Structures are given as structure tokens and as C-alpha cells.
Image (cartoon, rainbow, N blue to C red):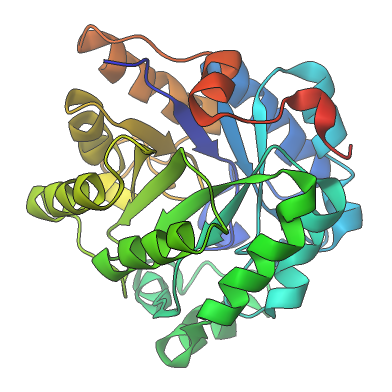
Length: 308
């Protein structure tokens, strides 16, 4: 079995700042949290930006430029910049940071989908501090996260000259077939990094049978031409990471995907989740991949070929 790559998604665009005092918001907080996650064992840090004044998601390239150089200087981690941004953004907005900064890795969602965040209001409705948070969550029951075939091709073609490779995010079985379609069109090249996402409202569920169905389908479509990783949302984060590692997969953790470090206990940092999943991996007699080992497994261009 190969070594296990830990990806840590630092802040994302799902949770709002009122949900946890530990969610990184400012550029300095995002940089420090990513560096700590790398020190704890994350080979890849997956990055979004937020408005430092109120924490709303933003894809302003100038905000990414306020933290990605600091992460690169302080760690050897692979820097992964989102092209997903948030469901409220246009594809042109979402693309700009990856296009300008030319990272080794960028994320890319493989299909349009319902993306329901509204259920979180039940837990946090009395704690929301900023005016944008309630409509952002409440309105998700009538919001489509748009990623058409044209959108996906636009992102892939726009980044092709930069030699950026992609964390291909698959929220359902059909997304695997979409990835295979773009592989057939030679717009992506093996090895594919397939990030299977479980437990978000609108995507595949978080049952072990869902996970294994994803794995079997990916094996059939891609054979040895892919590296598989698993993201479990919320309470599913650690159980699905453990299953993924035990069957030869890789793992993604981080406050983008779950705010928790056990029942009713908020995770105090991204590094806390990295350390927990590292304990699981090592308890399975497996080894955690270093950033350079992850680069080799994913055939990345190298940290000196980026635009920051």
C-alpha cells in the first residue's frame, strides 16, 4: 500500500464565522492554521479566502496573495487553491485565484448540484452575528451549485498552460463518469486525484455502502490511473477517513468539512483534526505521506513552478 496523503481543507465556504470561533477568517489566521496543519502532517492544504471584515467567502485574488506566500515560505505543503469558491459565485469569479497564482493543485467540482446548507440554521440560528449569514444558509434550499460541462471545460482549458493539476471533487456517482468523460477528451491527465465527497445535502450519502460503491465505480472507470481520497462531512469525517485509509485510500479533513472534534466538541484548530486522523492512519500500521511523496504520487509540477 502507498503512503496515505492527508489533505487539510482550512476554511472553505460552507460554515459561517458564527458557527465556531476557531474557523480561520483573516489572511493571517488562514496562513497560520494552514502552517500548523502542515506541521501536524498534512501534505496538502486546500485553500479558500474570506473577507476579513465579516468572514463571507470571496475569490478575490488579492486576498489569496495575502496568505499563500506565507504558507509556502513556512512549509513544504502542496498548496491547493479552490475553483469551487461558493455556490453564490460565477464560474469566472471562482477561477481567478487559480488562474493568476498557478498553484500545483486546484480543486474542481464535477457537476451542477443542489447544495443544501439550510439545515445548519437549526443548530446555529441564535448565534449568527453577520447580516449575510442567515440568507446565505436559508437561501441554499433554492440554490444550484452550477458546474456545467462547459464550465468544467473552461476551467480545465484556462489552467492547462499553467500545468496545474486538479483535486477532482465527486459528490455523486455521476461525477465519476463526468471525470471519465474529461479524461477521454484529454482535458485531464492521469493520475487523477479523485476526491469522493460524502454526506453533504444534495450529494451521495455517508454510509459505508456509498463509499464502497464510489470506490468500485472509480476502480472500474480509472483502473490504476487515479489516486483516491475521501472527504466525510460533519460527523462522518473520521469514520469515513478510517475506512478509506484501511482500504488503500487517502483522506481529507479540516474545518471546511467539519467543525467538530468529537460529539458536541468543536475542533480548536485544523491541526487538531490532522493529528486525530494521523493517529488513525498510524494505528492501522500505515505511514503518512510527506509533501514531496504526495507530489510524486500525483505527478505535480513542483513548488517552484507556481505564481507566488
